[in-house]
Image (cartoon, rainbow, N blue to C red; front, side, top):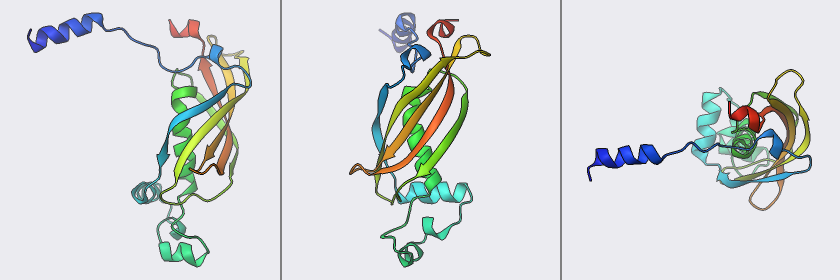
Length: 169
């Protein structure tokens, strides 16, 4: 069988699988332990800080960080936020729906190069959208943790979340 014939057969059998959860999956109190985690490297921190014009020496100058009592270069807090946010996307918003905002973001403990971050989100409210047919409005409390369990960040995030019936249209 040629490669062309093989690919043609695969295309005929392929079917689109929906990604992410829908509004109906977002019951108040439901907890999502987001998989994988992410180890933050010096390269991640330097690239992020440079590309976002965050020129605080705490994020790229080890001597300066140590002079302030830190054991090492501190990871840019916005990189911590973006990493934790990114870990939650597959479970919370990959199914579609506009991002509505973040509230009450708290950075609780420094993160250093080499720390591995994990995330957990809990549905704190879910209601039908009055203005967007086929969507609900969901708010989660998301928490980020270092490898040994210390909580480093928490925030509330709100999205419009597509209903299953709307996903079929």
